[in-house]
Image (cartoon, rainbow, N blue to C red):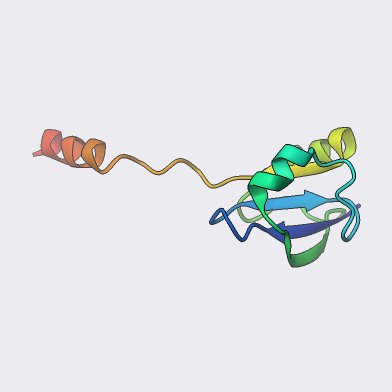
Length: 91
């Protein structure tokens, strides 16, 4: 199983995985509008991989087979206030 990964020019650390190069036919139009013009990042074989750097490989494979795409978004930014308050409790 191959996938093609595109980076979003509008959203940092956001990637779109599709089955074929430049084939966004199964990606919802609304998602593409928010994603921006996809910028090719890489082509990747998923067959002999156990994991990916920043995405769950099983979710990627499932998304590709069920929907024809997988959207990788960055983890939520932790609140600096919560970090500060948490450090205060340790003292």
